[in-house]
Length: 120
Image (cartoon, rainbow, N blue to C red; front, side, top):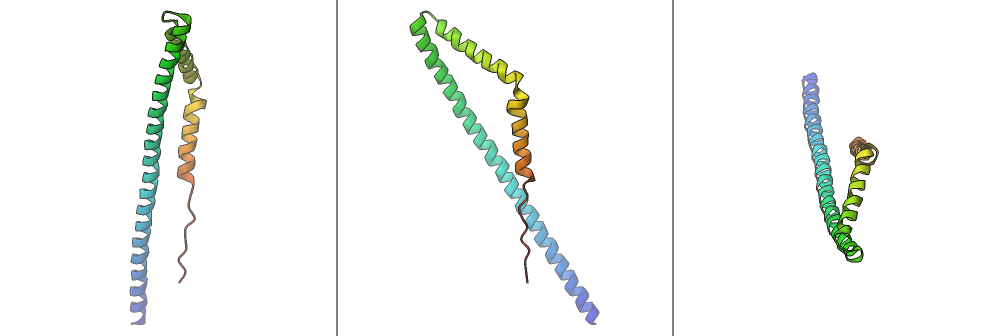
């Protein structure tokens, strides 16, 4: 009879452990998902702001240079600057974009939080 009670207590403990472990995994998935989504949203917002800055800054520079140089030469110069930037980014995209982004994602996902041991 004592064996039955011990076996029942062991079964209850195992069920409680499984439920707790399931909840922990669920919370970790939610935490990781929230981190990923917030990172994506932040990146999109910053990209839109940077693109708008580059657009309006380029337009300002083009109008300014056209006023100084005459005709539409300012627009050609600004277009050339953006073309050179596009070529440089495409040539060095692996070192400038792909590798840092991959390393950032991997480092954020591999960071493990210390597990708290419940003492009774």
